[in-house]
Every structure is written in structure tokens, then in C-alpha cells.
Length: 195
Image (cartoon, rainbow, N blue to C red; front, side):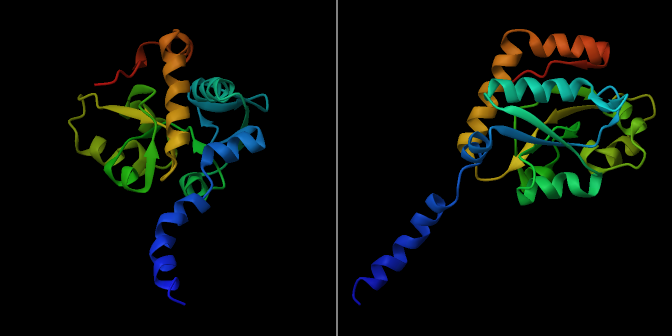
């Protein structure tokens, strides 16, 4: 029985090892589960029943770089982030702006683009906090507010974070991200640069 106190002290150190890393789950499944709403062109939408848009192609590229297939799951605003938080989806690629509230709940990739927040807010049927709508309403009407769009995923997955960052950096470095922006967003967005 004298080993019991020592074992109890070790349990907190062992618990992270019991939690599977997200990248292992993605590799075991052979797919990256990507949640999106598919209702906001040119970011993501359905065209004759098929998914299309800037974020759809970005998701396909990221999955390819991770050497898995992209499994897109169309969902609604209520399930999108809750599903990522619960592990139902691996990531959400749905023009989600980096906000302090969301940074408390999720880990994020580096921004994949900078977009005009008013353009995004105008396309939404119902305003949502993930695109900083409140800030936009407080801004002067002619002020153009730019928002950094990034990919949220569950906190506590450093290996997944590193893999996602490496994949995104390769897509940026070889010009594919810039080509996607030109194809889908034209002058509305610029490639996000690391500070």
C-alpha cells in the first residue's frame, strides 16, 4: 500500500498519454473531417449539389498535404463549432475569424487569408460572433474592417497543430494559396502573412 501515494502523484502525468492525439485519429481514419455550412459563396457553397468554393478547395489541399482524404460534413451554425469542440469534426473551415472568445475555446491554425469582414457579414443570413459582426456594426459605415480567417480545432493537440501548420505553409510557399485567392476571392482578400 505504500506505493499508492506515489501512483496517485503519477496519474496526472500519465493522463495526457491516455488521450489520443488528433493527428493519430486522422491518420487511422485516413480522412480529415471538415465541417462547413456550404451557404456562403465564394467561401463554400453547393453548385448543382456539389461542394465548391475557396474553403472547399483549401480543405482538399490540406487533406492531401496530410496524406488523407477530405471528408466534408455540411452542418449548421449551431453544430459547427460545438462539433469541433466535442470531436465530432476535426476542423471547421468556414470563414471563421480569430476572436478572443474563440481563442479561449480552440486552438487555431495561422490565418489562411485576410478578408473584408463586412463582405462576410453581409452574406450571412444571421450574424454570428465568429465574423466579428458586433465590431462591424460599431465601425464607421465606410470603414473597411479586415478579419483574419483561420482553422479551429480542439485544444491540446500539438502534433496535429504542427502537421496542420506545415501543410498550410507548404500550400502558401508554393503559390497554391495565392492562386486559390485569385480564383475565388480576387481583390477581396490577401494572403495572410506571419507577423
